[in-house]
Image (cartoon, rainbow, N blue to C red; front, side, top):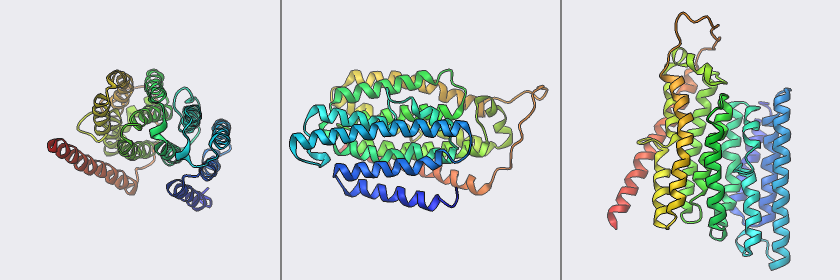
Length: 351
């Protein structure tokens, strides 16, 4: 796999440039296919039935979404003769294309592939799937955001936040919890894209840094279930502290960075008159808050009894270089929070 890493990074960079520089639907579809194919080796990087199953589910789901994108482009070309994503004016075609992009991102009711795929991947490879891989569909939704029906967008976002939090209540596998957390975070990111696309960019940026920090710390702790977190603070207290901060940031608790996009999203939804959408999203976030606090409680607030009859797990020494990377990531979060909150306060004072 190290041999293919330059190829994977180069291909992902090229696809990102295509998304940023083109509005042609066919070129964007090609970029989506390239990014899908290049992620498959990351999923099936080891001969394990779980990895093979995850790659199969991922490929079939992404292929279905790509077929819907081509179908919507064909309908738009027959109807208007245009191939630009900004020229899609028919509401039915726009809804079909938006739903296909929701499949790519992994929102409800097309979320079933995300936990199973993440469960079969390594934490490092999961970073690409949960962050960089979502950038292309998010750019397409950004370009067509004025045309998307807010009713469809709010319904999908509310269902995603609610069902992701509900499924995480009794979940004990940490990778699946991270996947469900990603679904809930993307719901908060997309619910406001019609009214404030710039806020969507801010929310996705903070989400990407925070979820990457969480996955890196989980990889250093070598934990796969919540029960394994009981020994993490004794083995690596600083890494466990970083995990705690990143989890609380994902939950949206102040004064951490994850609170900022949720606060601004609620403020914008209320200003646009979508009070019930804001209220429902807040209630749904309480479900996610429960399993975030459960992870925090097991990782940093409990210690196993010294007389336990269970066998302790062997853990490798923590590498200080990777710990420095995690520390810099959390420091960057603090700087982003301070700068953005100051900008928001200044903007409110000008009115």
